[in-house]
Length: 155
Image (cartoon, rainbow, N blue to C red; front, top):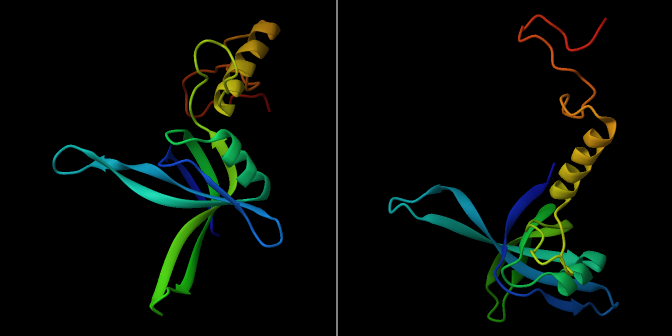
């Protein structure tokens, strides 16, 4: 299985090109923070090259800009090629299947965007308010006793 899920900030605006057969392709890179700090207490980042094709490429070109925080879901691809001097080169990049905004909606209420997690949370809150049952977490199960042998449903 080859699946990569990354969250980071764009290091530059996406570069949109088209192939000879008129297929849009966008390339950009994202800075992904490492989980741990270095010896100086600073957080380091890895710079991951991303390639998006077709609708994803057009979306990236239209809506993503340097500094945008995004989530990329895709697969890792390794390419071998020769440079102008005939040296063998290897490139590793992520081919994007999905691109998602990871920033929250800008304040001011105009023309922004909202993350899918924020939309889902808001939807769940509204559903609980409408049903009048806000203590069950919206999952259909009522809180039960704090006992490892008790089941949260009737048999």
